[in-house]
Image: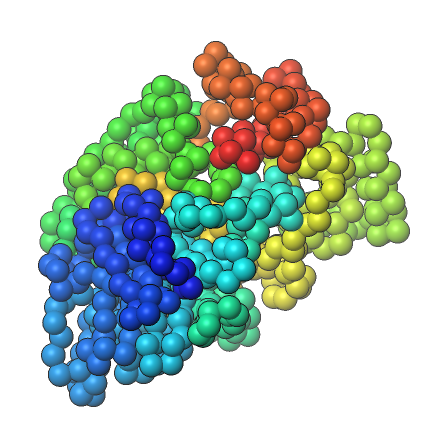
Length: 631
């Protein structure tokens, strides 16, 4: 795990700027720093290293290929690099390797097989910069599901830049890209800025499964797709697994074991996050079954009973025989994290579970350098209760003729009482055109008290900004025949990479901890899309196939308990002394007015509603994180 950065056409100031970029992402790679420049300094690479595999200087980056044609700066891990290494040797593409790093294997594979074929060959998480000195062409590539971040774009008229960390971009001399006001609508809807956009104009996020190609004189780029989550889902549903549920569970267990076995390879201590949930418990169970020593597991708990799963996690760890560490955090511990959040993400990000995620990462890093997590289980195996709720509500709503529903929805939303609260929620859902549209109008698309577009326009200075199109907005309704699979795919295209994976990467890398996600292995993902929905959800039982695997290792009664989720009572804390003063200082009317992006009257209307009526909970945190980020 590392951080990468690079510049094109930066002139005489290239060295001081790449050094500044490297410094800004020190936390992503505190073990070493490297810089490479082309002969004419037109292309410059920077790298910060967190040593995981091959801790020697032979794994240092940026790295040149054996034939000196290619240069790589790379962030991530290639889990099948040993198999690719053997192939390179067997086919006489490489006679001998200088070291044992996956970086060298990846680089030589690019040299031997080309970029597209190599990207399709590798299994792992990555953000890659590859320069072909002969063709004077720079390539940027991101992993299939979006585990590792990669920003790119232009500063000024012709200076191209890329980096793992947006803060590295903003540290450049002369950076003055304005706020991209088109993303404000999406940010205040979701609490994050969906790819390919960033908070800055002309700076973008490379989307998962894509690579960018830019040739000399580096003033125009082209983006291509090498793997598509949507195409994988469509193919899987067109070629359903024909075996029994028991056979499906056996195959999924085999694939997860293979994924975990590859992800447990490291030259540094490794462990796993463990909550009381199905996903992390399954990953830890399989890890322990594959290991001849006790796996290190980590959990955080809270003294507030409604938000504490640590006791159950401890019982699961005890049953599996892991070396378990838990930390009970206090309200004060969590509150102390909040001022640190703005520097972790580089742009507004407001998923409040970022706070406990940071705390568990910080505690874990004190013991290991790599941690496996159970992320992906909800989206791939129908774990969210929202999915079933949306389907159930749509089935009832669809019985009302559209000619009645749609006018009624508009009339309510235009009324004074239709701007917020449960009435606004019901009105927006009433106007949905299908299950996918209802999902967009639900808590996922609009927040806990769905924010009406009228209020949203008032929030962003009376709606003078145009909107951007997100993956949720552009999703083709009815793409998959099964409604629940459509909802899961919508999440895998946007919410999962842009919220969940961004949160885990940024908070973990803030403390130099590498996280790995076995359920996002290519073979696991593609197999999951080939399963009938009945293998994932049966009645009120979610993630059925994962439970079938887990119950072979952990007693059913140990897991079948109400789940509280990885949350904190943030809405309570914001009304208490300390955080309330912090919040109100951020939304000072004069400050909002000076920045000229939000409407202070609307902000304070929402704040007063929150204090007095406990509504706008989610949007208040969105506003606070936006203001805390300095925008």
